[in-house]
Image (cartoon, rainbow, N blue to C red; front, side, top):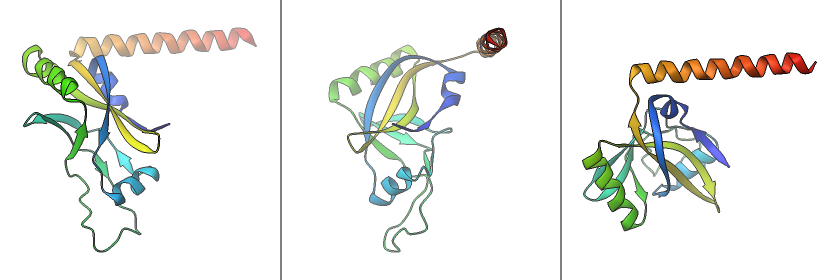
Amino acid sequence: MSIVDNKKAFFDYFIEDRYEAGLVLEGWEVKAIREGRVQIKEAYVLVRGGELFLFGAHISPLGTTSAWSNAEVLRSRKLLLHKAEIDKLVGKVERSGYTLVPLNLHFKAGRVKCEIGLAKGKKQHDKRATEKDRDAKREVEKALKVHKR
């Protein structure tokens, strides 16, 4: 069950491979995510010290958050992957010019997971071609819908 999708990532990047990572979260963050108070449109993934971190994910605290916990809205959150997966991703990011982008947040067995994509940036002409293809597909679907009536 998807909580939030990063539609901008598919417009800005060619997604070549996908990985599912766990997230290190605090209790108030999990509750806010369950309420849908999360936004990953401007988020990105960085490698620091052989570990992956999610930066820029905006999780708005609920009004019922405890006064004892310090609710940081834009803190960095550690991503949990197997060491072999991390090494593979780090190698591609550093050598091949790839980048890591969060694609969506979803629940799996009661836990919040982040799907990250190994991506290459699109040039402006690639973005225009993608938009042109999407518009053409929309027109075809519209014509088929009219034809069925």
